[in-house]
Image (cartoon, rainbow, N blue to C red; front, side, top):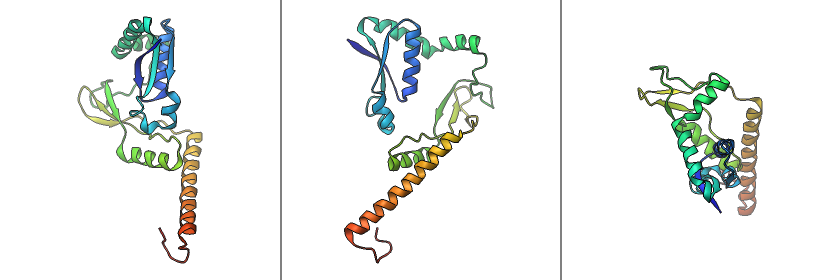
Length: 182
């Protein structure tokens, strides 16, 4: 029988944790990944993406989860890979932070996602230092051409959908001669 160890908002986070569990020798499964991937706005309502293990390995899995939360594996990664490119607070040099999405970008992403039925996550995080409590923007990472093409295609699809909806509305309710009918 499988038992849920942890739930995540994003599918990639669940897969990273599953990979960590499997590296420790614990068989793990990611469930509800596609539900959240298809309707990411409902991630919390759906309970998130779950990582599940067998009932007899639950305590080992919870210990690995606690070690991940404490940051025990971060030093191992630093030794193997070098600098992890973690954002550093420009005011105090701290590396512990909380992040949030800027409201205008998040609202635009939600609106475009609802119109196009595709996932368009907002970019550009605002970080809040846990040491000095000041906010700063995350370092800018250029958006790839593929993401720009995807965003442009989504906007064109949204525009075509709105025009088709207006055409249907005009056809059904017969208000072609008036402007605007809607």
